[in-house]
Amino acid sequence: MTNALPLHLVTGFLGSGKTTLINRLLRAPQLADALVIVNEWGEVGLDHLLFEAIAGEVVLMPSGCLCCSLRGDLVDCLHDLLARRDDGALAPFSRIVLETSGLSDPTPILHALIADPLLARRTALAGVTTLVDAVNGEATLRAHREARRQIALADRIILTKSDLLVAPERAAALARLRASIVDINPFAPQHDGAAGEFGVAELLAAPSTTPAPAGERSSFGHSSSIRAYAFVENEPLRAPALARFLDALRALLGPRMLRVKGFAAIAEHPDQPLLIHGAQHVFHAPRRLPAWPPGVRETRIVVIVDGVDPREIARLGAALSSRPRVDGPDLAALADNPLAPRPGGLLG
Image (cartoon, rainbow, N blue to C red; front, side, top):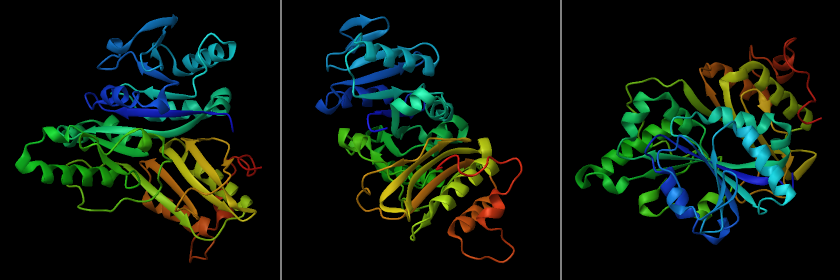
């Protein structure tokens, strides 16, 4: 995993400004050797930046980046691009930026990156960046489940077009939208793109798992079933206990578990956190980092679910903590399920 290529997923509903953001970021020298993959359903193409076709659907852009238009299956596309990179047919790009369709649900993409053995070994998710149109955001969230899932799965949120809001109502409109986003995903920091709060440094920064301030709660007309929860433990965990917890998550939540991410403090290696990442019922092999990210020294795992009773999450959290609870199962009892995978597969 030390040579895995960072993969940045950029998503957002139709008209949110994904291509505009990517075009701006690509001017930075840090992305000069990036590979950009765009979807054929993208609302605004990158044709005006194309410079020279070098291999099939892959083109060289003025910034030095490569750009590929995704016309088939993502997994096949990535396999082909990696093979051509290995053979020398493509320049040795150092990271991948994937722009999704505005109507896409990111969950299958995350699942594919983890479930495919080659991609799980050759790429490492560097974060999900979701763009939200400040002008139409509230209406879009009410009307489109895909937009809510894009926000739920985000590591960071970029508010776009805030400068187009009517000045007397701008502050109140942004406050409502921010609160609605926090209602769905309290762990993704929000940046005002129109105010210049998001650049290449923020894109390349490690994703945060710290909850955002609650602020004003949303008064949406819908009742979203998508929620994000955090499991935080100050004391280091034993590796077998963490393995049982992850197995229990997979067995009990299954496809209702949209995403799992975070860091785990392991008693056996307290100075080297484990990076946890999963989508639906599939987990990436936990990766031991050489050191803790700044400001983090505890187990902090975020679970994003759809249609899950909060009591189920509470039971899992109590089981992970190993603290006794009246009429509540411990972690071993939760994992002792004849239909569940046997412990040891994730960390063994």
